[in-house]
Length: 529
Image 1 (cartoon, one colour):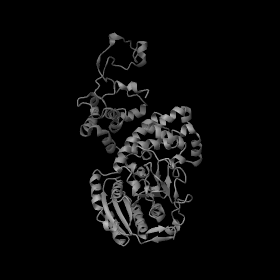
Image 2: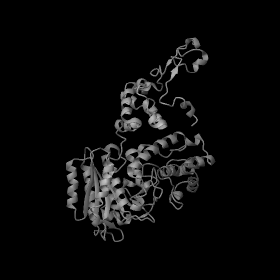
Image 3: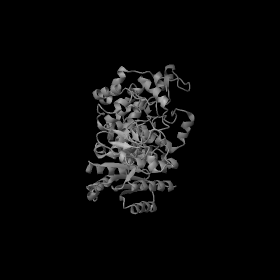
């Protein structure tokens, strides 16, 4: 904030700057000489339109600068060139932030013509388009025509009306199936294992048996794959039709379209608020670009998670647990292992539509990064990355756990949870339902328990830690304009919960600043891990 005044005068895209020096005088003006040692004064002024020395004053480290100068693609994406300026202009001025067609910015900044064409086509959305097109790591989890898909799903609801209103209603499952471009064998094996689980019926821990009286109503979408994989799934549906009623709800060729099934689930709950729904997937999130095939399509783990979330013990209720999963973790964001869960439609109906949620999380991610730079939040436990922030395709991992009314529970044993090699009946005997969180703060590999315990004791730092209540209150207010109720688990589990509850109710999004007035910390403390 204290630096804003330096930016203010030149913050408009319509500025037409001029200057009186052709060289970079800097502080040497006080000595009466320019950087080359030449004397100058008013008699040497040379008025002209600026900028006149953009290439001579790139600054920065030499090697990165040279790499930038010789790479047009990097120039196109360099924040300090047009991307950062356009982002500021669009944020500050909206559609009025688009420079004129004959503006000097298109001529003087590297990659100016390319940006001019992009802005001419997309206007103030040009930055978003650049992110999607020039960096395949960032893309929406949804297809461009998802609205049509959702509307058709409501009509579909329902051809199965008779099945849904039956005295013994089915287990309703929404299934996202993904096939990578190469090495599809593991993905196929995961699908087969999950169909085996669904066809066995719901496991009942009370009797150690499978309930086969209720059929499974399976809505599924497919991302990637050829006609051969589509036929494979259809064959499994036909083969197990005595237990599973299948409905394919979409086929998407675009890589990374994993979110459409959530639109289907959301639409179903809007139409059937008294039902429970289950979400499963054959692809474990968190492993980018299918580079880690063994983890992405870990068949024993996927089968175990599917068995748990479809079991009777994981059936949610509005009173004590409205979302159930195999394991629930509060850090680095509120989530269930594998992003597979069983949820009550009463809870789901309170959630934002998935694509709206993604757009809002993109905005929140940008604001969170800015707040980190302003030292409003600390991120000492875990470094920010797109998945942790929940931007773009990663938003679907955050969606189910992001509402302040979340009442989570999980069923996996606290010890030996990574052992998935037992037969399903033997494995499920070790499972039991309990309110969550009840295990470590984050999945294995994120944090050491002893280091986090020490961090919690550093109250002045933990109070502002984004992964604790500082970030959660910020997101709850932005997404749903509310915080959890007074009896929520969050106020007991997170550090300084009672303090945060009072501040959140009186100050809303400004709670962290309100707390900072009474609980200050030094930069020396911030640098301590």
